[in-house]
Picture 1 (cartoon, rainbow, N blue to C red):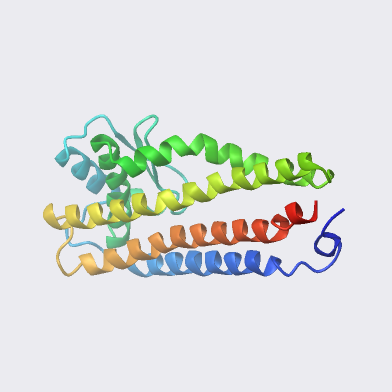
Picture 2: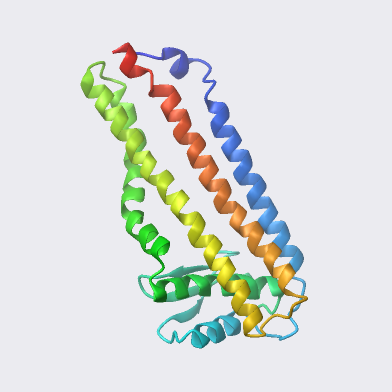
Length: 238
């Protein structure tokens, strides 16, 4: 089998995976610490995350999205398939500037959906392909390693292509998340839900959250680069 040095001995490309893991861990730790810090800052309006979400949605003319309470910590998300805005334990009933900011961010996604924001529509369209690609990528690559003919090369290339769709999903997610945060900060100010003195705190929370998506995208790119480095030379050897 080609590249036995990689498979049965030391794999120098694994450093790329470790770098990606460290980046994600640092980003995750930062968003948690930032959120916890500003979760103790009660907003002057006294509105909870759920109340702020309802107000933002209605001000945007959105009445068919329901605000729901879901368990967990920072498990907040907007589901376009059933039009539900799901707020976690730490956000739904909290009056902190951090909770209000996260709720407003999810409202940003609902507004994107209502307005037909192209990157969001593209991300939604990519989801099935990305999920399938993530599932099939490594099985195809591993099966391809048992062939030394063009069949093996084809299967490996197909596996790398499948993984590329997962990377593409991560990249398309970035503008979607950045735009949602931008909308959130603007609306919070315009609606008077947060004061000018409170917005910088919320901006820090949303910026830290955005960095987790950047970290995930970077980790995916590094993993893709690893696959190319590991198997890119197979075609030359065959």
